Image 1 (cartoon, rainbow over the protein chains, first blue to last red):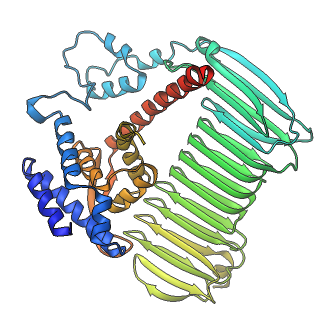
Image 2: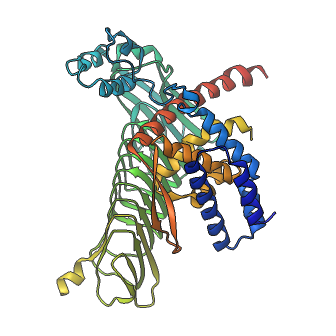
Amino acid sequence: MNKDKYFSQLESLLQNISQEDRKELLYDLHEYFETGLEAGKTEEEIIEELGHPETIAKEMFADDSADPNVNGFKSDKYNKYSYPLDMDSFKDIFDHSFHSAQKFKDKLNEKLKKFPFESYAEVNSTTIDVLREETVSNKNIKGIHIHTTISNIDMVVSEQDEIHIVLDGKISESIKEYLLFDVQSQGDTITVEVSLDSHNIRNINANLNLQVSIPKNYNYEKAHLTSITGKTTIDGLLTNVLLLESTSGNVHVKNSIAEQIDMHVVSGNIYLSDSTAKQTNIKVTSGNIKMDNVSSEHYNFSNVSGDIHVIDDTLIGNMKATTTSGDVKVDIEETIPSVNINFGSITGEAKLNIDELTYETKKEHKIIAKKEEGLYEIQVNTTTGDFTLFNTQASKAN
Amino acid sequence: MNVQFKKGSLEMCVLIFIHAKDRYGYELAQQVSESIQIADGTLYPLLRRLTKDGFLSTYFAASSEGPQRKYYTITSKGKEKMHELIDEWEIFTKNVDKLIREEYKNHE
């Protein structure tokens, strides 16, 4: 099958969907085809990847029948909480989670102005103290895995030979029996888990801190930390790989040395200071990334709405930064060695304050420039964010 | 992989990918098929529905390779939906993991 045949078959299959849907879908598939061809693929390869026209058409109809507006049936699939305004009791609210109730509240704005949400949130506010401790041997341990859904993580070094783990803080009394604190030593890996062993929990208070003290100057192969909520602090870790995943909460890593740092944070700021890593990959959806005195041969930053800020004495590595609306700021205090700069954006602009830069391209939203032979690469791509590269020394000299 | 598993998670994955970065269809399809093997073409009906439901919106912009492309971006309603789906997913997978751990592995 070739492209023309593919599309004529698809068009005949799509006769019964709305003109707009058909138009949009065909446009998208045309664009897919064009992009594929540009990428050097053949029509046959592209068709293979796209799938049979019947598969696509079937999917289109499947989606249509799921559309609440089809057949005059309004199931309000995505507006579950748009109940009639004349509801005479708010009892139903209590059947939803607080989050859903919040949405409900938005819908019934006027009626709910005086609704005491705050007092609802305080229902389970009686708290109790938590203190749990474990000490495990660090002998022949290669990996540390910490998983928490409900506490902060504080990783520190100590003079001890063992790993000492303390969970302390306060939680709502109503959930005390569900709090899980588990330390396991299996093979060469230590796993620490802190979680709530129940899902139907809302409006609870939890203010917990998980402190993990590791022996000073001990080199781990892998440290893997995952956290749903709570801040994470790491001070003095020595590891080949540091892998950190966090859904929400700030992250601060300092005085640490790793071959590779991988961080993936959905919402929260990341601050990395006085550390060394050959390869640093950081991905944040919303939150700022700040690097202060970190040496890395390769930085790879990806950020949607937050800013990226790198401060260093000098630049001795490659950097690749991608943001949507966030700005990218690089402040180099002493010298900027030979570098290649490549900046591209839709509406963002770049300000480069460095001496001896030769421009290959210098447009409003696109810059390709070079200093000396271009030993290091700085590549910045943004949608609306700006890029500034500032050399304190150069600005003094000017 | 089980086709029902893919179906159940595809909408969430698509929202997450677009939330991370505005993407055009081809780019998104490449990204998605790295983690979930699907026929790329089946992604578009889903994108169409998510757009119609107000979870995504589109705009045209020049791509880094040059030509104009239709970019998909997530709306605030879409973000809400994504968070909802992630919450549900986490509870669901945790329960299933637990079931496998306790009911299956222990009795094998």
